[in-house]
Length: 243
Picture 1 (cartoon, rainbow, N blue to C red):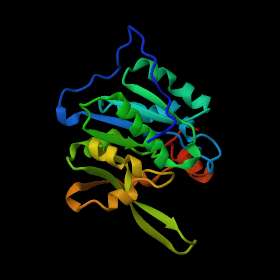
Picture 2: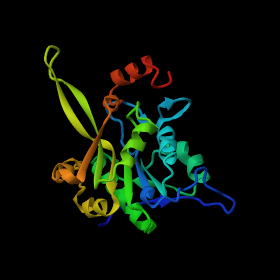
Picture 3: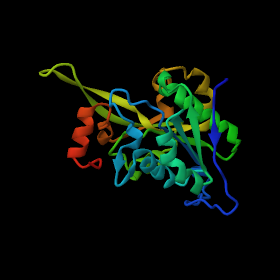
Picture 4: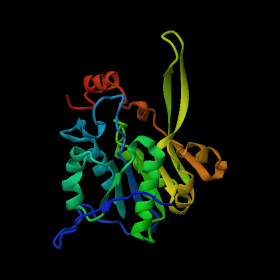
């Protein structure tokens, strides 16, 4: 599969990772942080919104680092220098972090994920047996939920939560979402990569799995994200984001 991938990590001779890698073979995972969205409905880069005094993309990457992965791939939009600058210190302080530039972020999350998978393949780390995939806008995601996902041994372990759909002011329906953050067997993820096209993501592939290959971890707090100015205002009012 041909893609425009720019993977880099400036490694200094005296640099050491901030987080050590654990020895347990069952925990030999990598993380892909999907952070290349253009935030068009929001009107500003959600990656740069501040939580506890740091950009969301850094906050979520540090949460990924806390799981002690073998590698962290951050997919960011090309030519968004502010986002690249925001993660620059993390990249230079951690040998396991690699940033990937998505040259066509407007094509959707599936392409962004495909670039992250390709970057992992290029690392040629045979010890990686699972991949944690996460975004940056689930404001109430915490380490405990990620630990629960990693603790389950299935081909796919997905997050599950209810999303309220506002069909009208008087008729609101709830739909069950199965999605990010998600942990997927590394070999299965590589097999799925050619099927990730444009905005056609993992959902249809996950739905086709037999029940003995899929587990879910319920966390309804994951339904809170920030796609619109109204959602951003609410998040700040709740002190989930800095003002």
